[in-house]
Length: 210
Image 1 (tube, helix red, strand yellow):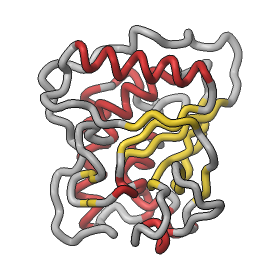
Image 2 (image 1 turned 120 degrees about the vertical axis):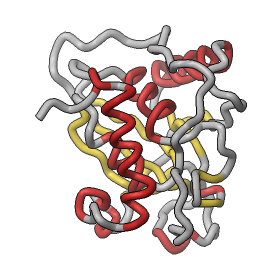
Image 3 (image 1 turned 135 degrees about the horizontal axis):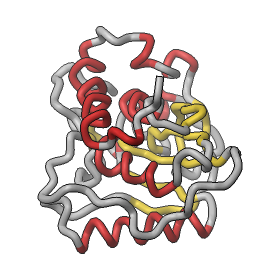
Image 4 (image 1 turned 90 degrees about the horizontal axis):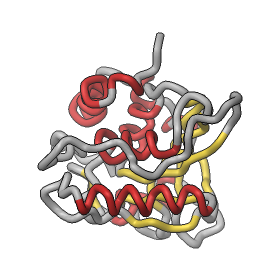
């Protein structure tokens, strides 16, 4: 459920500047396609941020992390199943790395210190999670969470779940590219738009070149 009481959702309050991942894969020598699946609260907002990242080819809003073999907005938003709102990010590893996507995820797309909520949205479906697809993604995510924790980047503990990817179910069509299609929507203006602006300021080198 998208609440009508708005807040600056997911704009992390940090104690120090977020660092580059110390553990990461180098940029690939040739163009390709890889996929990352991340959950960081309302997928409208997370999608809006990652659609602005250089090297990202496609972002799909959907559901992941639960045991159910299918998912839809009603079942997820009412807590009937344990899936989280998530995004499936297809990216070119010759232009952006998995670690750089995680930097955007932790620094811009959401607040990783909020447990089972994100800004004005409450419930397990809004939890923070990284669904790694292979050992390499797991290694990079584990190392980055440890790095951020040891550097005391955030004033509160990181509560992001790290779990093996099981499945991803695309959300209904009206959820796709929602922020782009509805820029004057109140929720988007208050919750998604500030994150996009934060991306431009916090990670300018990662912003898509027009």
